[in-house]
Length: 325
Ligand code: KG4
Ligand code: ZN
Image (cartoon, rainbow, N blue to C red; front, side, top):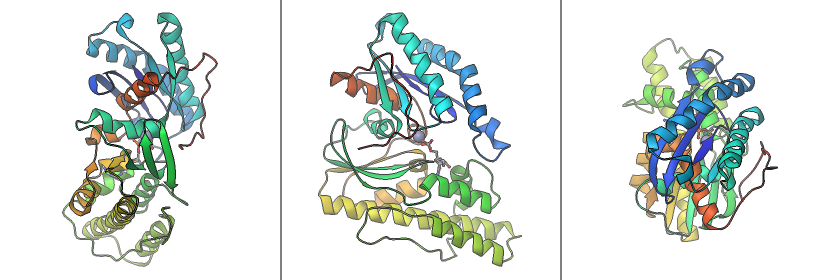
């Protein structure tokens, strides 16, 4: 079983052999946080408290399994919101104690990568992982299970954060990624917005792009909704260009077998299409529902950690700023 409560999704899943999803239950708080235009940590942790047990019970019922059939319990310990993480970690500890199950703490970013193990074709090492979420834009070389070397990261805004801020600038609502994608569909990227290539580095930067969008909207008449949609398409195109071009170049340079995409932004169709059409290196991308936060990815990651003999003690704590590699 995997449990995930790092941000605003309460999720539990049962996965067999690290690959087959028996159940995957996600309860989103998006409608609760929408009115604030972003996640309110205190509200998120209180909502996890209400939802966590029913979500775990649903995951067990859907998987048609018994507590005694479970082999281990994996839970996200970070990175994420401390109060939110604590709810999942304490619930996982209680289940581990009650049913004498090994407890395994999971890095949420590593979990995102493992969404590629429950999506059909198995990844082949070495692979280059691009994890693009609300808090991270990481380029990570993975040479084996649990073996990560971080090559690049964002120097300012994460890709998902940039989508969320751009949507706010364009008054498209929250969460920004799906809102921008919807507005941009079939629209021309008619505004030329800057791309930060950061030559010689695998890092990313999106704050200049965000500022350019802000100036574009401030200095021009955007009362026409088709102009807003074209600005959304131009912004999306700029983010997609940089993410795909830099990752594909790095994969060719490193001679990896595959590129693995993951994280909420990997649900974006323009990004998926750009990688598929332009990469000379085979690309694996989980279905959109496994790119955004879920617990099946946590369970899959837990399976491989368990295989390697990893077990955590009941004194395991949350690590809100945990990083990868
Ligand atoms: O991985 P995730 O669900 O949670 C974190 O670990 O952060 O990622 C959430 C982020 C948000 O910033 C959201 O706007 C973005 O992923 N996102 C998208 C799309 N769906 C979610 N960005 C672009 N296009 C999408 N379709
Ligand atoms: Zn995430």
